[in-house]
Length: 309
Image (tube, rainbow, N blue to C red; front, side, top):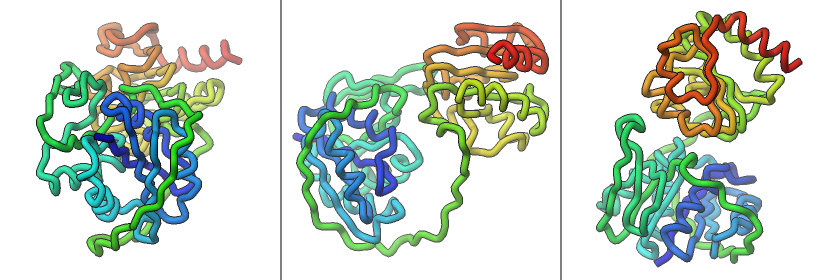
């Protein structure tokens, strides 16, 4: 049977994590459909149709889907689920909000944050903050799966899938959109950035975090932080990288003043190249770093910026 991917989108374009999810879906089934549930979302559907490996795009349009309310999108997925062997979504806040509802209603066990597909019924996923990999086999007729984007390459474009309009389910009436506060930044979005500069507790204060800005500007990088820095109030919550924050795998990850607690490593250790700057030579971050500098970050960062100058 086919696999169904629940697309994350803003009605105009697809989120990057959807492309990684399609790659996982293609490894589960040779027929992959994408569900675009939204309002005035023809542009998102057109983008989905161009993804290589996608054979059909299902578009459900209605005002009840405009703001991505999980209750309504889960109902739409449930209306289709019996036609599929796999239902997948990205392991983002979006997917994590929708798929547990789908799995519960289908009375199946959800398989969370897979990083590899061994076969259509067997998957690998990290456990114990990434210190071990569990191989999970599902005997459920419908496998409900969230996909960790960093575990799969983004699907290529160049496809030409058919677009089919389907009947939209009615508003569940269980929730209503109130408001959304968007953090605006000229920097790349953290989970999509190719370069990330992150600071930790060693930065010492919110004011000191500004030392990292010239480095991020020179590199065109996003800025991140450890949980310790976020909990201390140095930076906003949406900067947090780690097991309880955002999972990233950029081309270059620069960790400044970050000791490397296991929870932080779980969120960034798949980065292609890791550079660590810390005054403690025994800091755990050096165990995963490709390049390490033991020294005072308040001297090292200005010097690095000058060299890049």
